[in-house]
Amino acid sequence: MKILFTSLILCTSLTMGYAQYFMGKVKYRVEPRNPNPALMSDEEYRKKNPDLAAHYETMVFKDNKYKYTNGNKIELFDPNTARVYNYNIGSDTCLYQDANYSSDNMVDLKANAETDSILGHRCESITIKTMWGKTTYFFNRNQYRVDPTKFSSHNYKNLSAYFKEAKVIPLKIVVKTAFNCNVYTATAIKEEFIDDIDFKVPNFKYPLKNKHQ
Image (tube, rainbow, N blue to C red; front, top):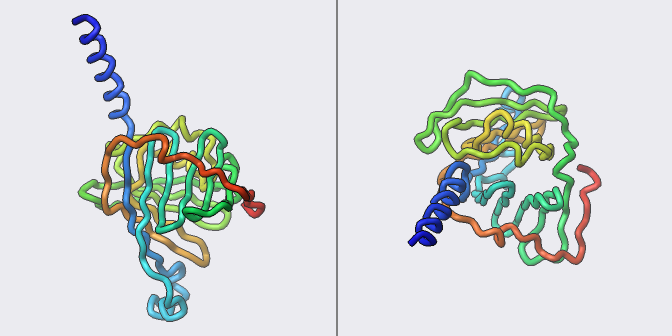
């Protein structure tokens, strides 16, 4: 009986440990938009970019790991090597970058007056400005918490700066440069157990470092 009671306490503690931080899947609708409406009308932008269309990406998240799936394309962060791998499913080649390095350094982070409501959650927003663009994140500080210390060195896409400030999964992301603008909006979020095998890095024959990072 004592062993059973101890086991129940242990299981409960582990469950509570998982529950305090988000683990699960987020489905984002990714919509390309006109990056310069002051210089070009939306109609003209669509005419010049007839092949641009919205698509969906799924992010799987656990502890200090994440993986984005876009059709056959994968972006996977491996904390063991501090690398972000980009590859196609089934390919023997990948392109990877150092997650501790940013080729577009942050120059400013500030809170915005702009808010939004995503999946019933009222969201505030912050904007991270870099040398070449800006990214605006919408989030609810009480939903889908993340341990920011697990990403303290993740400077790729300035993710460390975002998690340090927000400490939660973003529900909407607007990524804008002079030439492109993509809006990621969460359409479904499911908290569930994710096995570490989901983050296993394939044994690539040709792992290539991104020299233009």
